[in-house]
View 1: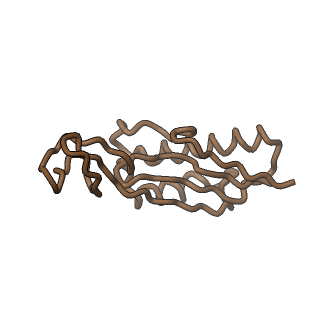
View 2: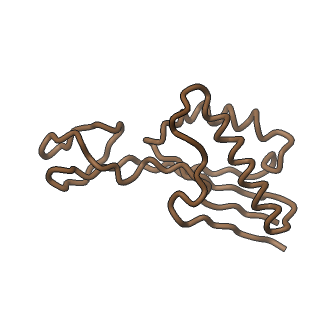
View 3: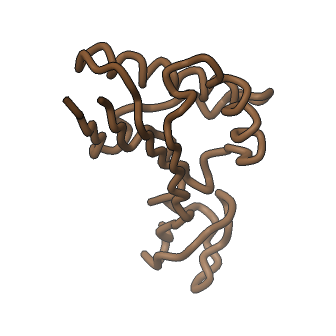
Length: 135
């Protein structure tokens, strides 16, 4: 029997705090392993075939460090042979002054229309398991 588990709601499966500063990518990978293990047991499956992650460009994740932590942490776990896909979500903000929506690469980029720096981040902070394929 094969299961496809999709986490469609925002923040349904948060992966960790963005407040950690030293190698928090490893703790995030360990949390992903825990989430996958919990879902595997919940659905009485045997194998995680694939896992899809959503990681925002503003989530504070160093992708090279995430890859390194992934390779080190998943060995001899249920994710060792799983196909991993990472969807990178671009940063986007809405100006609190004029309402303009624009792409951002960091949190306090000024609005290109009016120059306001206090803007609402509307995408790019995601950090979650989007889906698992179990069998």
